[in-house]
Image (cartoon, rainbow, N blue to C red; front, top):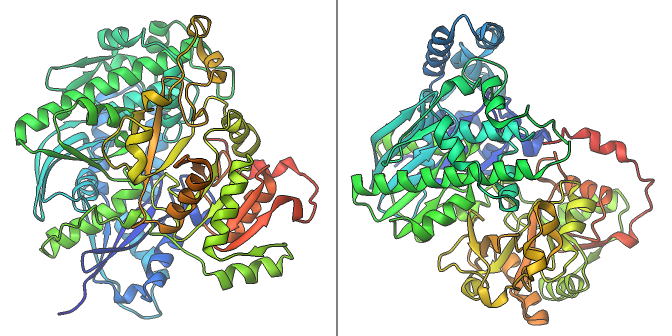
Length: 614
């Protein structure tokens, strides 16, 4: 029987990506930003497509189908209807949008074929071009790789063609649509409106708002529910559009929104006040309430015991943690690339199961291969590069390497860890990570200010040995993709003094909350990644070596990049980032590089201008 090869593509909005499915197995997937070094790159994913094909020894001519993740004409219909409904307001934004659509997006089928032709061998036939739907692609990415034969599926994002929230029932290889909430009523866009109002960048700063929330009190939650959004008992909702501009202008919020909250939006990079922290806490609480109500509603509709999540809102790991603890489902599985990048994979899987009518084989754990689906580099290739640039390095076998790294971590060193295949999705999971000692009181501020060059309030995540998670956190589930927030184990926590209890906002930051202060957030929580020997044996064995030395089965894990930069992809990216920051150690597979041994380079801060701040 002939092998069926399907390439999924997302592009032209944000976070473009490509994913390759071969006979139903996820073979490769990557975001374009990792190759282009432009964060959230929306262009056609030329380099990601090339990687996916070359990793399997294929050309475009070997494919049976290429699937685009949504239907552009339905999006155009929504755009036209929305602007006509708002007219004469929104005229300038309508003209700007039409210029882009008439120039690029309205004839997307022709544009995609042109891009594919440029990638195909001379004179080769192009594979069949298919189009999925935006929320169907999200649902496919959520359900098909999950470990469940049957599950409810909940997709929540800003907007697809029309849908902003959709519910599905997945069983075997079928996805049955149940109901949806349509634009402009959107939980994702409501959260993004507060992201914008608090001075962060829409479509990239939402996780900052989530990280800021524990510093505040949700004193504006009722105000939000009284004026901005009407939430029904079943979780369905409607926004009062008179407060917003996202449906008819260049900005997210309008004057009425600003008047309600008493001041104009915060300017980016200006000082954050307690007011902004309280707003972050308030919209987070409202989001959690809606997610819980929607989950209970879909549980009542389906009777399913398992839930799958995708869409940008599914990256809200605080809401996910609450849903796991308080929701009606026995198990939850969240697509690690829940945003639009993951929809490239969802579209390919939808084509495999629905267009080609193929059965689904449920895999133990899941079918994502730990989400290590990107490029990897051999030791010979890395050594050749290091010798070429005359960078001093040591070659160590795994055993001695891990023991040495455990010693360096114990000494407070910060390590750039480049290992195996690059992760697909927004999280570094032990493939392209910066790691440190979670017991070190100074580690959070050192990593934020001297290595990541980002806001001091931003929390760091722990990577913990899978079998030890229950000893470190109030969590009895696996969390391989860092998408669940859980309380730190009470026995590890340090109670606050009455004086410390009176502190507000960022003043809370320097109070150690547990014996793992570098990963314990101000509300005694952490965004947990459980590490399994079966999916990332080298990262597991490194943490195991640290545990043998210190008794601690956990390390700090943050993404290998600086603020505004995509996560590193190649050894060249990793070495450049290492040399430009105050990282102490770099590990490129079995090559160990110490900063003190590297050639002295004149420090030039202008390199940070290469990356637009996110």
